[in-house]
Amino acid sequence: GQNIDQPTEMTATEGAIVQINCTYQTSGFNGLFWYQQHAGEAPTFLSYNVLDGLEEKGRFSSFLSRSKGYSYLLLKELQMKDSASYLCALTRSGGSYIPTFGRGTSLIVHP
Amino acid sequence: DTGVSQDPRHKITKRGQNVTFRCDPISEHNRLYWYRQTLGQGPEFLTYFQNEAQLEKSRLLSDRFSAERPKGSFSTLEIQRTEQGDSAMYLCAGENSRGFTDTQYFGPGTRLTVL
Image (cartoon, rainbow over all chains, first blue to last red; front, side, top):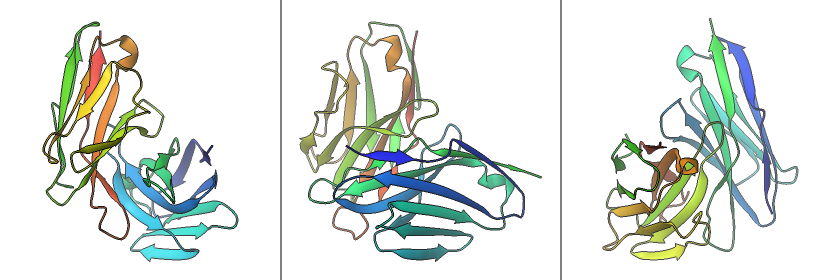
């Protein structure tokens, strides 16, 4: 089976940096997605990591360690609009690449 | 805007009624996925299509759930004899599997409330 673990909730201050962790256990790991989901809305794509290392995209960066089964999403210069749920999802190789989502981390940014 | 649309956005129905939801991906999305999401959970995979072929349906929640994609473009998800436990957000996502990342682009979802 697959197991994905994320913190349920995090709070941070506007302008600060926050790191949201995702650990996973699975066989045949292929890649890991991060999605942002505002309340009542659909998930929107943030990043996709297949190789180890850090990928930076503006204020958001995503890191993957395949050997440790670990990823994080780093959000810099937090803004109030970053208050949302952040979902990590993994795909497995050798088949349909159907992503399995974690429960998501609800991030609350306060002034 | 991902270009993926869903209709209706909200549906309120009485227990025992049938409901049908529609998803329209963009033309490049040869794959189309359906998910269910309940409060505080991530999307839960239901089924997916590669063009018009339904390649995985074993995770549809019961035989009351069915999906079609007759011409490989839009798709419908039907729930027969709805139950209160079916209340959830139903999401569809399109994917261009010929792309590198297999990234899925979600529609806005249909929120179902079963009374």
